Length: 344
Image 1 (spheres, rainbow, N blue to C red):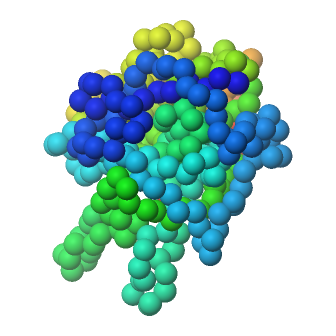
Image 2 (spheres, rainbow, N blue to C red; image 1 turned 180 degrees about the horizontal axis):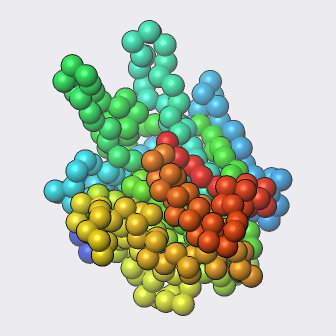
């Protein structure tokens, strides 16, 4: 197998992996792929795991024995006027932490909590393919939003792990665990139809699907199916990886569709805010046919818990028209491995 590298672009200029440590406020976008060296021995195990789901790498590193990764890259990936800060992080693991598209890793923030105990592990969906953003199988990427809010007394509260991650600088060390998760694994069928529903940083696993399908080149894998992404965000300045996804759509117009739902800037025909399910309603019949028809589409959700109610309501109305029960159909899809939700 020959892996290919998709290198970060800082300010529109391409940089080599070794130079990707600077410019923390630069934007991470897609670039053209170039041949890379053969994957390391660590990622050879990963390639084997990809051919047999029973060999999915799981819990290789645990809280008592975490892996110490090195930060290579930390850059803001939302506009200056965005409500909140979101960054793209790349950790070096030298091929020792193999994983698959759709899995997560745990992060252990240093220090102790108010009870004098180590902080709990926080799980984050991986945002890079098994080969990492540099294509050498030696890195793992995350998309992280800094958590800041005021409590009932008006005091500012900072999320321990998200703030730790957002403040990391190239060269810093970070303790990671995992990988974990099998529910959100990218379908093995290269001809699958995949509907991806995300809000905010819930885009992470779907970036891995799309990069594997449309950015990387492999001698033993070629995606011939179709993917359709619906991404919900509050403002256009918070559309994560937009340039990257638009490049993919340009290169694969018959296989990839992306629709944005920007709640604070867009409305539907009746003047209602454009939430994820609102945008989906514009394509309701088409989505219904993809889910129930011969294509037997997969549905994956990742993001805020609140997104599920609106999506269930939309599909519920569609199924009811045909005398069907969406809840029962969804349960059947889940048993078939065609429906998964990872919400928080």
